[in-house]
Image 1: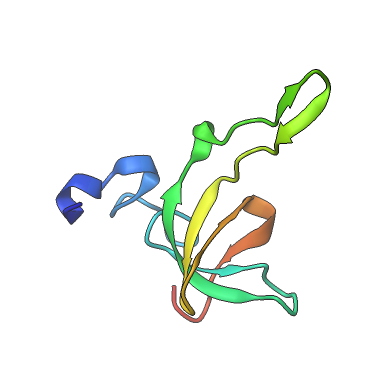
Image 2: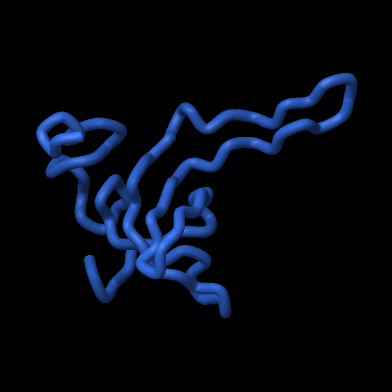
Length: 91
């Protein structure tokens, strides 16, 4: 998708405030842990992050995560606000 189409979608683009997480922000995933990873936010699901799905009292699917992060080492992870921070070395 061309950049001009993506700009402004889900908090992305030049309107994002410095120090705040938005699409295209370099981040740390699981900051301060042995599993800390570096990456870039590729999607902010914000209000679209859902709730768990239960059928007849049995949980079928857990709630969706807010952030999609493309990892520097390859791969994609989905995390919530408590597992992500702006990367101070690349912001």
